[in-house]
Length: 389
Length: 128
Ligand SMILES: [Zn+2]
Image (cartoon, rainbow over all chains, first blue to last red; front, side, top):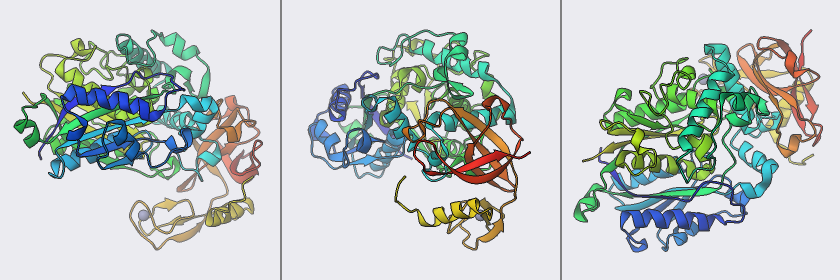
């Protein structure tokens, strides 16, 4: 299949900005992406905008046109909603538009504003990614859902809280040089183990923060890139999307993520690569256990093996496979609707050498992966990025 | 308390409350929590109603310290997934010290109301 060039990336700092309206944050990220690509609003054919709970947080539906306006255009636009995978799937739709030949220049990205809802409000909002009837009404919060999976994982494959703590420590450490990260704070394994429980066995430091922010990409068709001399050096060469039942109770296993596996297999096939070719990964670590489920679903580790990967140093900066060099959702932050786009932006910038952690990427690395998951991985988007020259 | 009736879901809760719990099984043997018209795993529409076993077994659990506003007065509370034969249900395990909860413990299912909202909630009791 043809590829989609990543011509520009942009993001706001991720953090707590309760007074910033979403359209303003997306304008900052989107205009930066356009500037990075050397293109203007008049060049945009279509806008794909990821957002999860803007209807609750900003009392705003029909956000697509607002996202386009924020970029300085009234080009056709739509909002894509798939909980935490919203902008991963916005990118997937954008890649399809470019590959089909229907569009040459598209902006894909997303935004979330949550801190203005307060902790209780944001907890309520995030829970909406679960099944209302069978999960939310039984007291399942977003952390509780991952806690249920973490305990099921320990029971099925082994592992302990200390293994998870090493994942948090690693991702915090990676974020220390990333000025766009929500948390630039060095932590220890003991900090994680001793932090307050939010949903046992997960503690506060097993969880990503409640973040505000936006991220955007400019994607180009190969013909447009060639015609305008805009080969940016990195392209999306594979895209995959997997699904699963909404509620955990309807799944065979509570300790694996089949939607990630399906999305990854599709993306690898699409790009014509195997997991062995992947040199760096940004995975969806909304909670520490989620990084484990992701690495195993992606086929980068066998089931039961990824739990100790950070503790053994394999996924650290100097390990065999650096994971979440950006800091991940855990430390970079998780403005839900912006996360998938921020991941792809990080992979692109790590491959081009413009990311603050690019020095951790080996010179022989030409393939990166971004993995974005919705809810308890009832939806998952995987994108393969490759160096093109 | 919300006035919204979720039809067949409420009927399922009524059945659990009356001790007449049931689930569906498709021709391929997939066990499904009602209400369902079709099996999401294989698309089968010939769902057979099967009596829910009286006792289930906890397969995973968590103690929620930071709740949604709907459970503000209930926290901390234990939410568990328990398997009743082939089918799994998610509910709140009541009257229990969170430290005493273990995978494999036997539970029965009923309906109780959440302290905060009075909403009906699938509830587990430890089976003694
Ligand atoms: Zn079936």
